[in-house]
Amino acid sequence: MKKQAVVAGAGNESISKEEIAAYLVKQLRKKGADDVVVSAGTEEAVQLKFSNSTISTTQSWHSEKLNIFMAVDRKLVGTSIRSLEKRAVDDAIAKMLKFAAAAVPNKEYLGIAEGPFSYKEIPETYDKAIAGLGDKAVDILNGAINIARKNGAGRTAGVFETTVSNVYLLTSNGVEAEDKGTKAYFSVRAFVDKYASGHHICNSRVLRKFTPEASAEKAATIARQAVNPKPGVPGNYDVIFSPLPFANLLESIGKAASIFNVESKLSCFAGKLGKNVGSTEVTLVDDGSLPNGFDSVKCDEEGVPTQKNVIIDKGILKTYLHNTSTARRHKTKTTANAGIVSPNPFNLVFEKGNFNKEEMLRQVKRGLIVTNVWYTRFQNYESGDFSTIPRDGMFLVENGRVTGPVKELRISDNLVRILKNVAAVGDEPEPVFGWEVEVPTITPAVLVKGVRLTKSVE
Image (cartoon, rainbow, N blue to C red):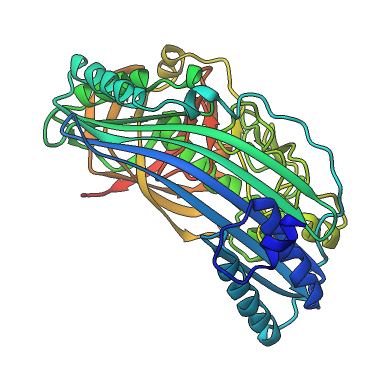
């Protein structure tokens, strides 16, 4: 009775996640909704920014978020609000019903998953040590800054973030799930002079696998080696992509596997299911249930338990990523990648190879090492034509030896061509996530033959 009294109240009181989700499902069903999905979440976050090798900003916040989806006669409406207050929820319900009345039915929509489901706990996705880090975060960050300084960095800048989240999911089809998680993320750019810089990141769901000092050392080492770069010469190069830039490309490849992008002509994988899209060195999976995966969760946005999906197996495209509706339309099973409207990958994993750094270098007669890229842009999503600009340290390789840093080159190539030209894969995968890589990706360094580079002046 007490819960009902709170839910029925007319004020702006904040209600529990479970109560507000149940209220939303009940009210929208009463108003004629066929399908309803509500995700109610809270997050505690701490962010430390640093510049000129000094912590410049420290802030923390508590946030609430409601994601609401409903289908009425195949009219689809979704919204997000940053409040668990009943007044805000009632306002959202009224607006959603108004939008639904004006919407056009989506004839391709075939419903959401039928529950209930049972869920397994995913190892290493919640850590009390991160949740209770407190002032120790400052010590961790200062330790990383000092390591960069000891390794030659004149100054450093970046960010250290931790989050603690709790999400409750309820649907009109009998699905109920709750998931909590922790995350730690660190990004550092090290500078030796005005032009020489290096960048590295690390992320983890558990503190014992979080390595900011190692990242700071790597960033400083790249910056130190990148002093006095010479203008590069355009042409075709064998390129060793470090994990950071290759993850940037893999993110686009993972998104191209979404059936939404395939059907929207935003994917270079349209019509290629079961066909060769890469060399035999290329195996790429998406795994929403990966232990310590940065975006691992118990279930997708419909409540289907997450799983491991092989997207590309030894160069062959094996599956598109589906939700329940798209899977029904294509007469297959969901891959548990909802996005209710647009299926998306959770954690991309590029299968490691057997080559160490020295062995990969020995295979390069004329090539480059690219340690980072930015501004990846597509001239044509359907064909996969793209360009991206190497940044931070980029190094010329001649006859298996690094001969010095270079600059002013742009990669102008094609995603499928890149995959088909993968010649060697490293044996040390690294987790990558950040501004330029929004889908968490785990990949080693990768050698790609004959990459096209053009002139670029930043």
